[in-house]
Length: 440
Image 1 (cartoon, rainbow, N blue to C red):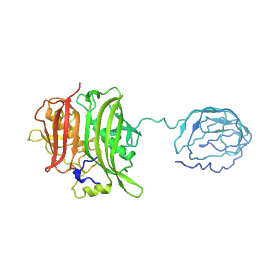
Image 2: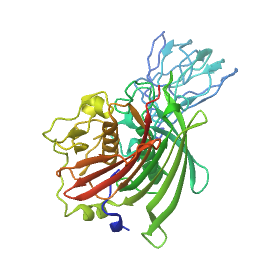
Image 3: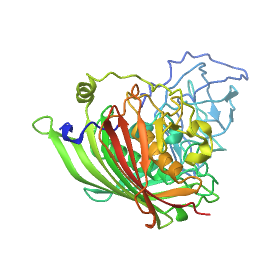
Image 4: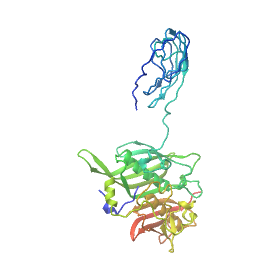
């Protein structure tokens, strides 16, 4: 996710079964033993019963030994899903076979068969035996592809699935871990409200790619974000928090690319996040989608660096900005009260999950939250409402100054805090944050 320039400048196996290798007959008149890595073809009659069903894909076949036997054979052998067998007659053979599948096999039971077979040439034994085999596990919960939410680490993907309900409404599932390395609260008993902001960001990008046809490789600008949370309800339980999201995609704008095709360029997203039927958060955001060529033209004349340059000023103490670990702090104090330099750790594995040519939007949202927390320190607070508008990209190579102010009166509850960010007198973002005492 990226943050934009000025709003007025918005850019409009299956492998075929080839059969066994040709067999070379070796007549035998005395007992013999043979080993085969593939059940060979057989002719004969088998009678008996079978229980269970199994499904396999076409598999490659190999043949390392052929045997010619004559006579009546009674076999217990390893064909697909059978056991080990012995052929009696003019020759005695023990045959074992494997068929490495090149696709996915799904077992639905075990098979039992009995009977007698007459075998000529390279033979597969079938007879009394029981075998069980395993294949694909039943469908289990997993995350959506990390590429769809623009994350490099699988561990940072919160979404687990989605379903389209109407042309504009979707339901999604998500999971928040009990202990996240960055989205934490000081006492570790509640989820961080900004985890809802990251979930909203992921939802917008995922639906754009998976449901609305935006190709991978496109860039996204998030113009604004509004978030309301209920921190007192967001208690961490004894298991990860499984969430249900309702998402509405509205105000879509599409650009015609060919006579019969269009491409999504802009949309609004509104979501509600529920846990066990209880609302935890609601949010909204406005997104623009840019193809790579458009993004390159947009950024062509801007000097960029792949990583931010750390500010020489030491970062704020973690407890003053509501964090536990020093490397999670993104602000450095200045000589002016309530002013900070933006100074995140450029090697942070969450804030800089992947390389960008500017500060990611979630870094700026975190900076606004930490500035609000520092302004109210030492009172422990948590965010209940956040509104942020992005006006320019925050460039890596340019100093960024963060300023937080309280309204003239503090009698309103929750307390609103106004935060701004500037680079060379250009406004990067403006934000309004409401807080409440941290829940116990």
